[in-house]
Length: 137
Image 1 (cartoon, one colour):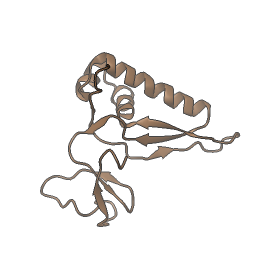
Image 2 (cartoon, one colour):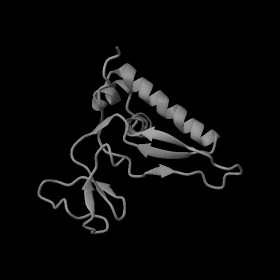
Image 3 (cartoon, rainbow, N blue to C red):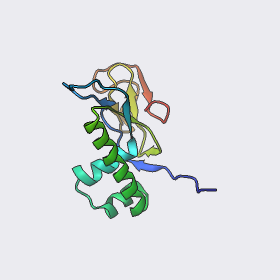
């Protein structure tokens, strides 16, 4: 029996729900699911320019596990580009660092300090705010 997968720490969820190809000459069928931990691996390694050891420590996984997550993300993104498929972000096997909220009106994702109000969106001021968890991507 395999070991249970540990949750991967994600500092912040992606600020988007997905990407769609624009101006594709062939029809786009299907989509690719990019997990939050895969997004985090791409962000840490390619955007923040961290080496795999530093990024693995930040995500609370081994270096080898980080490398597998990173490779999976790169392959998914490459497949989406080549096959003109939509990329959708999904929660996956992650745990968010701190409490995160999502606005049901404008889909903004945010965290707030204790002294601020959690019941209104800082972007659109809507009061339709819910806590972000595994069921709400």
